[in-house]
Length: 176
Length: 186
Image 1 (cartoon, rainbow over the protein chains, first blue to last red):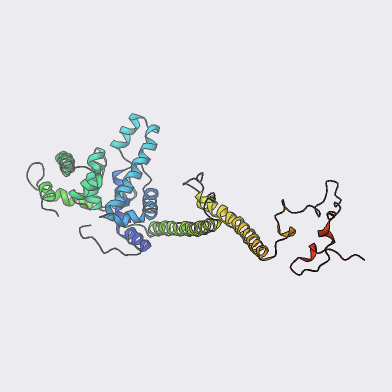
Image 2 (tube, rainbow over the protein chains, first blue to last red):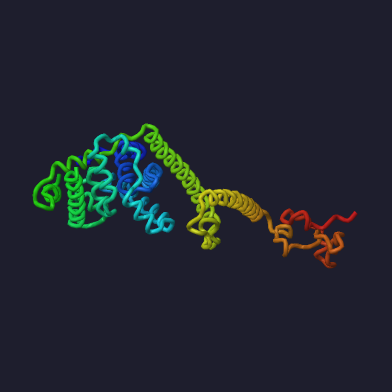
């Protein structure tokens, strides 16, 4: 993500390159930052929309961030659609105990599994930044651009998230 | 990493870097490999979108050609002609292109028919101008109605020539059309 790859001139080749570059990252983002959404469906729809507006994608200074924004908007739409169906208690329950994702089984190590759970339990605004930072691999200025927030806001949310994770980790280690 | 944000963040809220947590988070949240079936699905989605886009473009191009033809025909109809089809004031901008294409093709066919008839009529009238002036050359409403059927379907009797010297003029004249030459009495 740090070095922009040379993008093909052909529109279809551009999209196929982005499937290779961003498919897994988008999937990780949707699964982790937006639990409850059908990640595969949303990522497929993200690429379909990108193909429909390929001129805008090409005009975007960062096609990867453009794709992330599409995915994020789709997730938010999906969450809005689902929101009335969930009662507050169910919503809180879902937040504290998010459904396990398919790749959690593949990840070895107790700490990793525990960290995933803790990240899933973060408030959405903090969780999104942590996922964009560690799962997608964005830098903070890129995160701020992607989310449309000031850099300072992105940093303060990240600090808050990391402080919370650190305290949770320390608590667990002390308990052990 | 950018020197401002990432260094600031790496320092942590307590001011001390926490590379251990940083690495642990990276390891825990790293995206796993994407399933080949899912990757194939994404490529298929992209391919389908491009096929649909190509089809839409072709339809639009055809409609564009049809519109250009309509414009050409409208110009051929001459100034003051009411705009039709895509140029009509009532035409909706958000027209379905395939419907528009169908109606444009129908319109072009009609226009071509009309144009064909008009060209034929103009050609005929030019040919008539070249002929000597005579009764048959006049427009239908001014022409003698001797050949026109009467209301009961029968043809009216031929007009009787007015009596007088002119009717008795037996001088042959090649300047006069045959139909107006006095008939030789048997």
